[in-house]
Image (tube, rainbow, N blue to C red; front, side, top):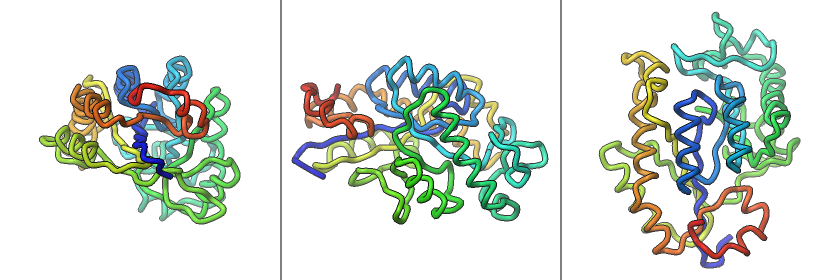
Length: 268
């Protein structure tokens, strides 16, 4: 895939989950440090977020969700299937709960409904991927094949993977040294097409309302997201991309070679 050029795809996950996440991703996109996002279509802020993404020119993939891991902030299946729901009617909390009760036909119908809902909102999806963990790789492969969209998760034919050489996760880096980890990665990344996955968000009260401080997910509510934003917005990041002549792009750009061929600024 490499012609000597370094191309980085900067993806922000969980778009549409809540306003703080939606707005934080949009701010990073406006700053030129997020090139695409993946939307939780059943998320409470997804409808607003998809409309704003269209206005901002932010490409979106589908962050397919079968779970809702937040005990205080809930989202719900788009379909009527009882086998995907917890007692409150929202998605179950995780993979173990889903495996204990979900019916595969219900899962398949829900995945297709989420892709269809994004299309109905005017979104031309760039790809599909799972939220949190993969429930059934076979269904993802089938969805990839049916829609013609590549999948970020590992899938067998007839599904297709992303046209990238590697995927690196910013969010799992230690908070105290996250910016330095990002800069070190960018300084060493080789020629080719590479994806960085992050979870930026605005630092608002929305984040602290996702779950209780005693939850095992608490770090993912605020600390990880705010530090992701800080790392991406650090001016040294864009400067390093400029110095190394790294091109920041989206999967939509890769699907339209004329966009990349006609670009003159390696960081947009």
